[in-house]
Image 1 (cartoon, rainbow, N blue to C red):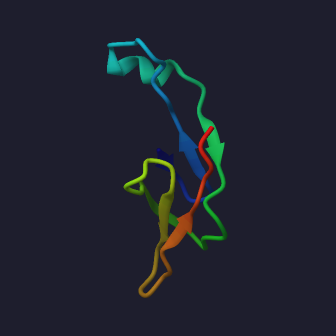
Image 2 (image 1 turned 60 degrees about the vertical axis):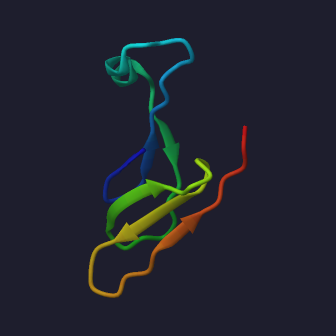
Image 3 (image 1 turned 30 degrees about the horizontal axis):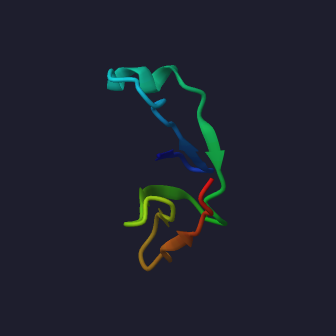
Amino acid sequence: MLCDLDGGYELVLPDGVADPDAIWQQEALTVDLGDRKQGEGVSYGRDGLSLFASSEKKNSPLYLITRMSS
């Protein structure tokens, strides 16, 4: 999971692929990270599905993005 100022992008290594560099050959899935003023960071939650996203500036909220399993 990567993010920029506007949104999130998830790259998934296909099953059975042993070379981690192959992830850069995959098409990134766009992920809505909420109404952040200026995106700063993103991380997976413990369940591997939910995401936490942050923004810049002091006292900015931490956004929880709950996703359904596929």
